[in-house]
Length: 421
Length: 192
Image (tube, rainbow over all chains, first blue to last red; front, side, top):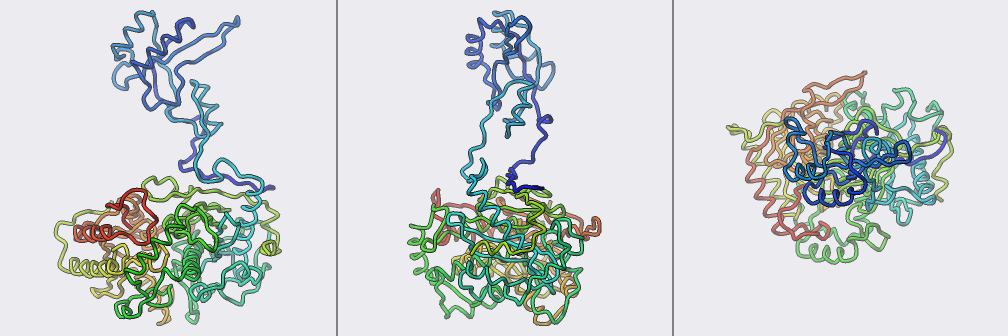
């Protein structure tokens, strides 16, 4: 790869343009003089249910400069001989215009891309409406936004390479409305892995709370000599095994150092980043998390990820929440003065496509867009093994993009983070 | 597909699910979506957990994740090795009031839990049959090119489901204080 590129990963698996599903319809050649009348009548008596993208009339230029028109009369029955099961109204119309029906194929679903559309029209003309979702980027990125995406992805890749011993997955949560890093995290599953602490990044992170600082601090030094340079995704396997979304079940096989104080099979980069962004939220907007110690005794199984046993006072918190919602909802993005609901409006940059656990965690936390650089052939949940963005039953949907990264960026060693100062 | 509505859950199963329901009630008392669970090894409860998503503002803090973290914390203090931890998880059963979501089902597969018993199904997010079936890969770790490809676990649903559902009813009656302003009136909406 020589250039940066952002590719939308759609909700549905792409179908090769020439292999789109088709359905049979009954059509007939018609005299151009009567075509209008005929189509108007057909639209009344034989609507093309579920085929709104299919045009009723096909125009073909034949020798001598003449045009030949054919019209879809009705859908072909799937049972028995379709020509014998034409509805009565259509039969009458055929008789009065002396039409001779034939069976032809049209594409069953509306085209999702220009390529699909062009292929469809070879069979029978259809209409094509480019998607107009309300998530920025699906219909393309401006130059400025693209540069911002590339910059954050460079940063994520840099973090992925920043460990002492091996490449890990890294996550950067960003508020795109102000192009600000909300939090960063690396995988924390391995007993011997200590993520590097790059001080140039600190200026971007909020004053860390205990939840994130205890896990993400280290004395790590960049030591790229252990990485065989060149392209990240082509590293020998033993180096990539640090990427836990690639090997979610690999933790049990890792040798652990019993002196190591921290390892955890589920602390994938995205999970840690979510935890850290939640801690940041509590830090910046503490009023919502009123602590009431008298309930502490009921909290005998408190979370290891959150410092103190806490319980909100019912009446108080309900009131505060209502107030907070007046200015935070429907914003889609945030500044420091406005509290977003979870990660609503935020983007996450991941070096590797996340596994299904991380992908679902990002649904729960209401991330708006996911950008990843390298597909995950073992367990990727955003198009490779699963395609979670296509599960319609979920209560939140994010847009997914793959960022193609130029080789030179993957091999370069200088800190992309410097560019954020 | 997990079996639903086990006809004669034994007394132990009902007792453990009752403990999970007590955890769910604790969550409800704290204005959290009422889901609770217990993890059982050799007939003994070794951890319990309940939903803590509002308190932590972290929507991934489901009961199962809480209970798993409690165990890992204990085992870390005892300085158990990864293989010892894997060994214990492979002997543990989980009792949870609602079908694990896709994230939790994946997490349970990753840690290698032995068996899961749940109350009501989770029609929107369920990872044990409702939306995805992450429990139903092979019961042993599959290997593909030397890469472990995931562990399945036995899964049985429908245990004391009506009790679990009625807790959700209570919760949505009082309203989720931390949810965004609803587009529709608060009725029986998404469950955790």
